[in-house]
Length: 426
Image (cartoon, rainbow, N blue to C red):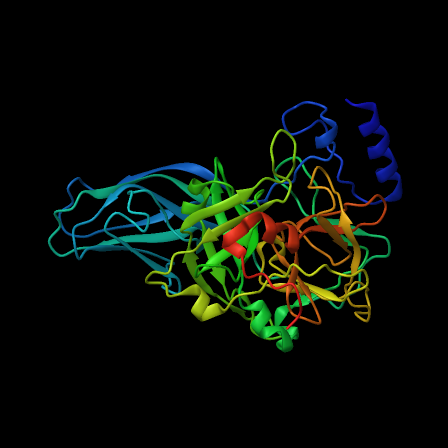
């Protein structure tokens, strides 16, 4: 192992602050530009084999409970999905509180369908047909949830002095962190932020053998229903095809335990992506733009609104807030940075260069984060505009500081897709 990494890791361990040092680089080499390895999204489940199918062609209806013992959620994966006109499939929870409908050759038109998540270990798949005659479908695998997504108990802001909570991450990279205090609150505690929190969604998607979670948000751009998240979350059309963006998944009251189920919207078209680091690429901004589907689930932008990015440079000391789905749980906001919830989150540093990113493209802040927070908006508290896209944690030695890409850099790289980024506050 690289001696510099051993020294750095030892120093960080001595301070009690988890470091963003992993060895070696993402490709197995000690590339200086990859000294800090790119993080991955939060792994929430595994893709496991499952065998079920209709007859081909099918005759009349078909119903089966798809169960995976111990799962916290189930995502059914249909192959060769093709139904006769007028027929449809529902994937529902046993009590019927969750139910999603699929027809024809599926929402992507190619017969490959990742159904939205059903909470718990059982999903009821039912083919609704009076006469049959279509090809039907097969189920060769499912997403088996391993991460508990139940809401946390509401925190009072207290934490063990000097403690740091680390979220489990599935791959090499930096965990997002809660540094010594808990400054996050349920989003319902801040009704004044309602229009700003509505465009923020929890993202669930499939990559290889896992189901992953991040955060994303609807962004003002040159076309409707445009969503932005990190490249280290979603970077391919296949991942976009499996995307479930759940809006409105949050506690209904500040101190209560009731959670609104929210509304799920499927992924659509991958528009543009820019890699997390510059190593052997022209990336270093870590963002992806997606146009969500505006189908039978409704028009996301009309329903949930959008956030506006700005090319205006953030200022050190400017108050910010950080809307997120930490650990895939109901929506919270990083608003405070102290246990007493009296010190607001602020921009700590601007024009930084973190872990192989574009030179001078990063801002630093001490709002708490967690695995699943990747892709969240960092919002200027005065203007209400987005100044950063969160993607890193513990970016400064001994600081427990988080990092995001400045929206000015993303707007410039995205070109016409984000050509209306304002440079001054309204």
